[in-house]
Length: 313
Image 1 (tube, helix red, strand yellow):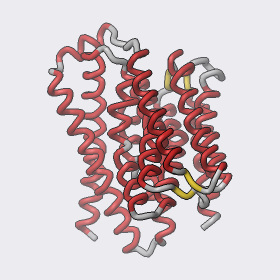
Image 2 (cartoon, rainbow, N blue to C red):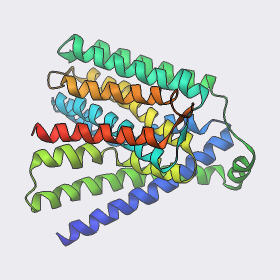
Image 3 (cartoon, rainbow, N blue to C red):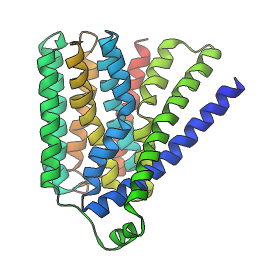
Image 4 (spheres, one colour):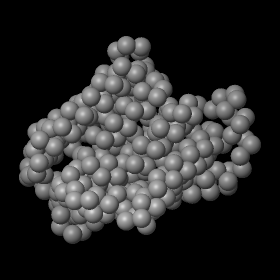
């Protein structure tokens, strides 16, 4: 038990330091390359922090357990949007650019609604639908890079020049490694400790495992918010959600068709509500911003959903 507690603390430390390194390195790369922090968050950071979901979902698909693949993505996207983005906006309101509101958020909504349509139109996400997800994913990435105008400016650009590009890349790699390894250490040892004190496997699955794969996104967004890099945080959440549906489910469905019979209307409803709220908040309160009171409503929705999950145990 003592060793597991030590490893649990070590995992949390790796997550914290990894998030700090990742944010600093990714921001420096964005400034050096003239790419916006949002697109860096959407691609490099979004993909890196989605690695745990990729491993879990692909493993589930290869083992023929589609419930793990689909359930992991739905749970992670709800966790990302309602809890992580909500907590981030509580720390510091998140500015939403015109490109975010006209391109990125609508695309995330479209992808989420398409996923819901595939779930409801049949009993599985088949290989052709998986291929469609992958094709949309590639097209979206190409479009983002081609239409990205960058956001380098004054003081931040000058500070980025101090950091060598190779050091920035090394920080990103070390940060991603710390997040992934730290997340695994945290989930594995927290699960072992919970079982040792008699907590049920169902409780562990809904709390520790569902939230564990989203720890990298949570740590990265909180650090980004504290460093006033809200576009990096928003890009990380939206990017992770796009990666989860288009890349992870697309790849998993190509490996083997994914059954959607276990998905309930409530699960899909909360998933759709989460992205609708992000879109809605750009037009309410202070325009083009996710305010603290809006973030609190997102957190309340998350708590209500988890209460419903516990009641279903």
